[in-house]
Image (cartoon, rainbow, N blue to C red; front, side, top):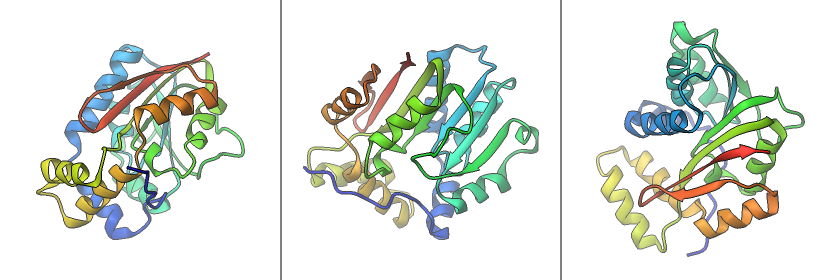
Length: 217
């Protein structure tokens, strides 16, 4: 099945609200756990959350690593506004929200860690993500990315929606289905690495997710 693009940004307020208020606590916890496994539990550097959405993963990461600083970046102003308005008071000094669309004209800073969840499939040109990572990563900077994998056909995509989002609002089921169609395959992502001259580890970690991690040397 060929890739079918979806809108790059979530800017409709109803869509933003539905996404922000959905219960993604389990996958977000799982992602932060994988970050911990990758970088250890004593991280105190500067991190960049690319495609932070309403900030839920940044919040959880900040709680886990209270000595770190996070730049949470997204191209959707409504998403960032939601994140700013819901950021726990205890985390305000740790998290800096940045409204910017990739590619960046210049990096906001140089980062010890760059992480991203569910951004890759939104991008018309995937090299925008990999080149941004190269642009923003410090020496031996750590990288961890999680995203969806495109299924073989639309029938399987519909089955995944029914299996994992059957009880969610229609707007979330619609977005999940089209996100699956817009995602990449493992082979496509490996070709992206070759083009970007990046050496990262790639692993399918579920029937619909890929995990990418490594260091930018």
